[in-house]
Length: 425
Image (cartoon, rainbow, N blue to C red; front, side, top):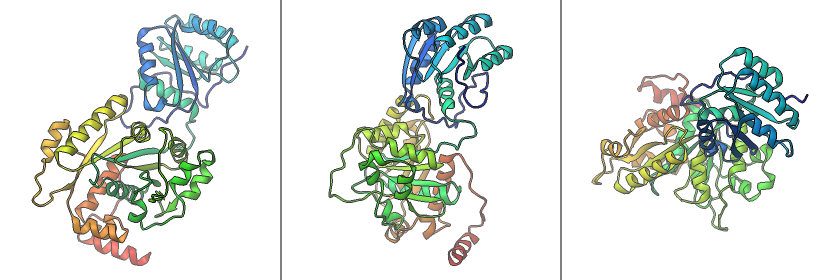
């Protein structure tokens, strides 16, 4: 009798609730067919198929349970993954799996959903080669986690997280925030990171990091057939020990019109090689920009404290929450707060309209930010003890869910320590 393909390592026999900060890797481009025995499971399957992490997979949901699956595969090939549900007794479930095994192609992975919390039953299914057993009721995140786990072994290198930073309006300083947060993630959190400047005609990451690489992200987008780890590594420009840059060309000798999936391959390669990818998303609304935001693990919207920014921030949050029902809501921060003589919406009123507080408020400091931009430096390099630098460190920790490496806390000693560090380097 043909046994089902078993994934590496035994999975838990229970379906734990989703952990808010849990990172579930995107499911690769595979075919999945589900045969449900209950309407609730079918609804959960349908919801899972609409999740951003399942965007590449093709999921077909049917009713009928194991019997329907067995009958369907007598005359047709099995997909990459089969999900079956049984509401019967243990003997019925095991008997149904034995019949299904006779018509399954070698290598097909099977996930079973049952209503019995029985360790003996679970061991019998593992012995038959079932890839995972989940106890009903199951939710969309449970299903996504289970399918994703089939293709990422527990001992495999973790898949990198993407943080998309976008401005609610043009000119609000979203790129500056993205670059400084990425720098803080690399320097203070000590997490290997890449900044990907997606504003190909007008990107400023090269200027902000004082880099002028001969190649960058445009070479990857224009050569989709060549994209692999080695190719992308050649395009990266090293900024610090833990930070690299995928720069935009910032030239107007061509028109940068892309399809909605233009950046998918680049993101896939970066996820496989770097723990953290900060995406500097320009203020445009195209198919690829929308897809990038919806597909990101975390989202930070940068807004100035005025009415247009409030409207746009609310529209972005509403759309992204509707498109990402199984993810944490996007975060937002206020930037350029306190411009002299400019009427502003107070942070409390901004929060009241959006029904949650900003993750940070960054003051308007033209001298500091202008000096950093003109020198190709980050804010912490110009003034390590400034409150803006501390805000970027806070954002880096909050958006990655990590704490920084312990540093001297005295505000009087910090500038001296930074000066000595620069001299030694």
